[in-house]
Amino acid sequence: MKLDCRKSVLTLVATVLVALPAPAQENLQQGAIASELRKTFTTVRELPITSVKNQYRSGTCWDFGTLGYFESEILRKMGKTYDLCEMFVVNKDYMDNATHYVRMHGYSQISEGGSCDDVLEVIRNHGICPEDAMPAPGSLTGDSLANFKVFFPELERMVKGIVREDAKEPLPHWRDSVQAIIDRYVGRCPETFVYEGKTYTPQSFAQSLGLDLDKYVSLTSYTHHPFRQWFVIEAPYKWRLKPSYNIPIEELMEVLDRALDAGYTVAWGGNVSGAFTRTGLAQLPEGIRPTQELRQEQWDDWEFTYDHVMLIYGKAVDEEGKPYYMVKNTWGETGDYQGIWYMSRDYMTLNTTYLFLNRDALPKKLRKAL
Image (cartoon, rainbow, N blue to C red):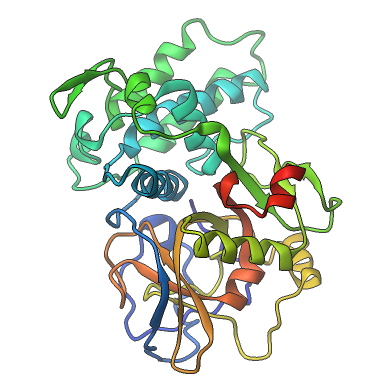
């Protein structure tokens, strides 16, 4: 997702700074590196994941991160490695987003961003295909990877033009026009394809993956809504208005630890805005203690927001024994750890917007409450 450069307590420290994907690069505060530091980690728990992917110049961390999560779920359940197609999800989700925008008469969000729920709903309603069943990202526009710098502004202009102020009704055949733009830049979704010698539709392929799509849940922790209730997180990229279950932050972190210990990876939606570098280490500045109150204050003041999705797949400790989480990012094999981030527990506590995970990973009492 495109990153917001508002002030944040986030500090990422590094030995090198490499080129960010365009959405982050445009808002990077270049002088915000607190110190130069390379840390050594000892792995405590590491779960199987698929390879690191690269969202490149597209605001699609929600897509790459969540598909990486579902790939890890398939690994856990079936022991089989899949490379699922991010551009299939982009194609279907942006059409869903445009449809929602028109139905809301423009009182909604049309953007590159999204959430884990978008990927879940695309697979549920449209299916999925393997990576090689569609054109490689960027190949239709002469780039090496997904580059939405031309594509998305054109799509946005088209969709917003459908609900112009003087419009009495949507333009005739507007869906065909929008779909044509999407297909031209990211490729047309296949109706059938062959995978490992068998012919599938996107729907039948999704059914073959062994995923129970009713098992997945989003958990959050804010005090502007009561705990033990569902609410829709008020973030621009969550246009599907899918609710999350609200629990205290200490409990949310316990859920995360329990899930990893039980062998379940977790998709993470959270804040990486502000002083952000690219080397793979995330920790809070000295003296900052993450609390429920501070989380709420910074959310309400826009000091942090929901602007990134990644995959949490393990735990580690540094030289001093301080706990960190191992996180697969969506920016290719960059940084000191080849695309892996080590994020301190304090950082995770303060900057998590929601966790997306399998209900079976939850404590029994919480699972029953849901």
